[in-house]
Image (tube, rainbow, N blue to C red; front, side, top):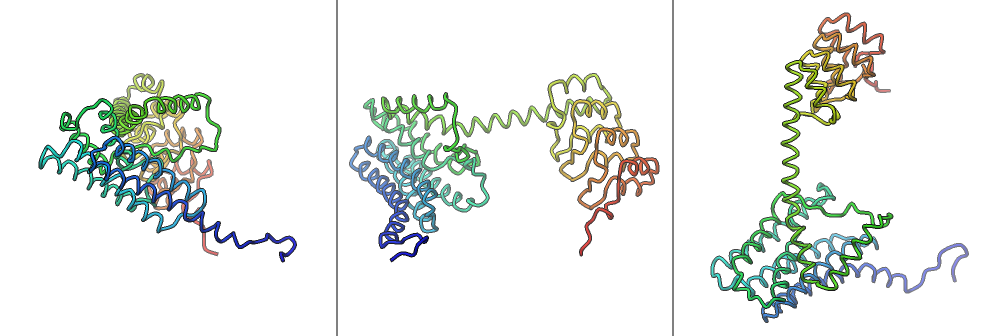
Length: 387
């Protein structure tokens, strides 16, 4: 008999909880079976079924983790079991199926290419398991093994539709297999999509894109799925080249602006800052353009940068502010301009010193007076004392 106001428990509750706990592991087992089935069909030379089985394993692998999180049944056992399943489905199965389809006739080169893929998958999974707590969830470090498996299996599936024999494209198959294996252990970043919140409202166009994609997959599953995997498989390298290009462009931009400050060419500086926020241009140690202008004792550049929106309290990678640098240098005009722009005189550097401490240390009495008028205090006064 249940107590009033207390939830009633039944004999079915432990069974239900146990069933929920088994659900993600059941999905992992099905993914493992799909990988094993792919190997068997590859040995039987039924390559279309083998390729489809690898894609099925990829879908099941994507479901088991999400089901575990939704039902709050994550466990160390499940994580280890999932890794072992992934090694079979996305490591051994694609390598063996590709070997049977195209690489067997290449002799030593063929089995080496297959092994490069297999060991790449093993290393990728091991690295993923050791970086769970430190990795940025938005990005995969290296091509994820399910995507690599789909890249290899998709080639087999598509060309099998055209009755192309593996031996006819063996060199392309070997190159793709090695590419997938090497990319898995590379440091190239691939978008994970884990920051997407499916519970939030999405724009109408995104819904339309998803519907069109599903329609295309239903019409030509092999071509569309492989096309998506090829695009994803090269997206990391495109992203890397774009980031590198942007980094080089920013370095050149910083150098050009730095040269204008060094030469005192305020006109050129104003032209270059026309569409560039000053705080977005920094050097390798995080030093802003305002810091450079102070360091070069270029007061017109300091005034121009502040007028264009430079943050007066910007702190570089060493923990130094422009005001502290000006106080240390005895650059009184810059100190007064920075204070007028709203710079905080009580920002402390890593050693606990403020601009007032630095000015006193270097005997800059006028700067000390200006800082005191603006509420400047010594770092010792700002240090909290123990109760």
